[in-house]
Image 1: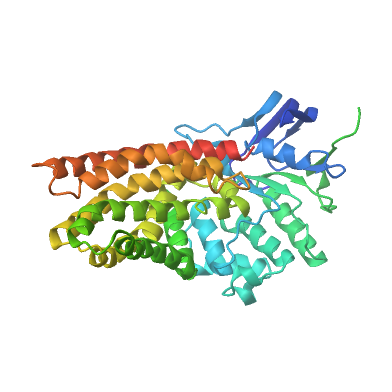
Image 2: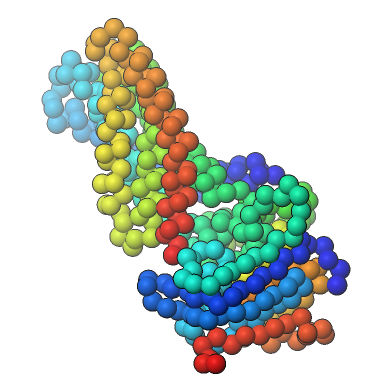
Length: 218
Length: 223
């Protein structure tokens, strides 16, 4: 492992999530280190998305603790949420902007450690398999292509924490492989990933992948 | 770096507004329409028209901005952009500030450019016309800021269309009062200049505090 990203750790203890005064999840505990991925599994409606939303700070949690442990650095007032991507089923792409414009916008908003030029955007589009349509309006994309564009955001800005909600939904088998490869590369760089996915991540060093199954009585 | 994110948001909103030109044109036509209807409704009394002109212009601007604010955050809310913006390199309140500026540029500025049409229909003289432009320039940022708060509070409601205007109406009344006194030249010596300063004060305060209120409302919406 060749750590290039700020090493974060996550400790979740005895977490309970309430939405609209209904208990969605309870008694969730796990730990994830930098360079590790946690896969959330479980039936539909069991609370995978809610758990990711709680980790991203969108929800008030009932009980328990979500502890994002920041790498210790002086004069660093960055918010943990700034170092985080949440890729949900909503693609956050504007239909009357081209692919290139959409991706450039998110690169600028999310920040990037190097200059954002057209080459960098095109490179990411190429990796996502969308280079041939870079100047088409996003309106013309299929569901799978929208997902690819949405995931391409991960490549233009570097953030250590990735929260992925069904990252391979609507993708073809090529797409599955691509997602597995960017996840692998991110873990290599010392990133931390929590993903709700049914994708079987076949990796050489699979000790870095943990799985928890939600909604099973202990 | 952060400034790049700030300008990126303004640029994107302006670009999208220019591509869906029809939406902007609707607002401008609505604004002009009010100016066209009034002379027919109250009769062609030139003195009367010039007297009520400031009120008509502000009313038209207020109503047109109400049309615009409902869709202010809606698209970004529905396609997930607002969620993604919570992980941006700038805070949500800074983003709200950028979006307020973009909203002003894309909705109010075209109205100000259309004001000469109203001036013609309402028999304004030059001095009245320039005071109207000044009053709109200084007062409309507050209108947009309050509108933004209303839009942020109601964005998660499926049918929030009419709730936002009701929410922001009480806040907007002082703007209308000062806006109109800033135009009228017969209210008393120096009154209109004081009104301009008051209006400027309201606008600056509103633009400073509204982004925080908007960010708070948007965070609550997501639950």
